[in-house]
Length: 466
Image (cartoon, rainbow, N blue to C red; front, side, top):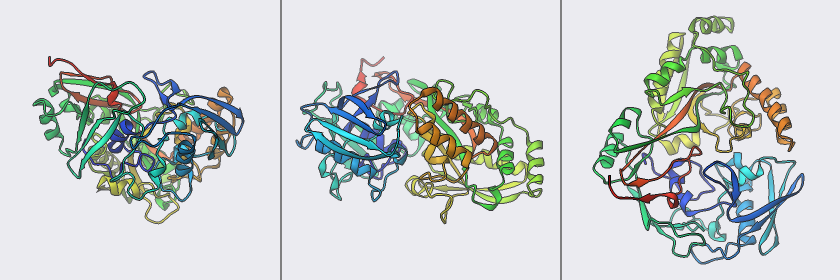
């Protein structure tokens, strides 16, 4: 990996550097299988009792790696911990609408919501279960205890994290006895380690490195790159300015040059046609710098303006290069964007500052993952009260509210299609690309990557070196 986790508390963070470890140490009530279908896991079944109440039957005989039981008390406490308004978490989009969990009996919990919550099963694929010991201030640092197939055996800060097979695991024993996650910020060093057999898997192989790996696995990701606007900034308040900035960026050339064809322009929505809520009438903004200049002049910015574009170092494949590319495209229509680069852990916190608060980024580069395969995943980014939102549009809020208050799938699709149509007229971001994940692997590694960016080492095996 290119970056190191700040914590291994799986409820606190939601970045890949952490999940590479925590996906294998902690588990969820429900999980998506290799075909993206939601299936039981720590819960063996569930039922919607009424519009605001669900019950979940828990798997018997499961223990945490410290020997304490995973039971209804622990499951309810896990839910209540992450939804507690005093608890700081980056997983707020996974908890919105959940009010509380309570114990029904030793093997059953009840979850209440503040209204109909049609995406609750999807949310629960992303809420890790933690032990009662998670109340300790050491949890996620010196204390890392889950129910999963692996345990953390050592954390050498800044260098590596070692994991060993959990011999008390409730499920099938994974084939690999252990694995190590190394922190290697330099992409060439990572490739060299792969070529010499020091490592078996490199995440975010650069496009130009793909032909140099012993093997490569490429998957169309449920990840969409974008540059979020702070619409509360005076320069960005007028929708014409934000439409102009979308028109100023040549996404086709970005995909073909910076990404060497390993990405495609997205259709101005963080969805693919197979995902719930996709609007086929909404299309990518064309590259039209002349129209962009006209709109800027109409909005009172004929001479452009100065602004900052913030990007993390080393987190996203070609992220810094993309930010520089977009800054150059904006410069061509008169917008003078200065690229500001941040350490990942610093950026992760600063980038979530809401647009109404001081120090909010005016322009923020990132990737939005949609492992729900549902338009509801983006609500926290684009609603007036969203936890990291920098826009407030009553039409968007009305559509999101309508979609979130019904279990009727056709009604949800119609509402989200209206949402994306509005976010095309009143953009919340520069819509860039649907990304590909490029994984470099050793010849001996047998593994099929997933589009939802999860990493279950228990699905990996090692064969003979080819």
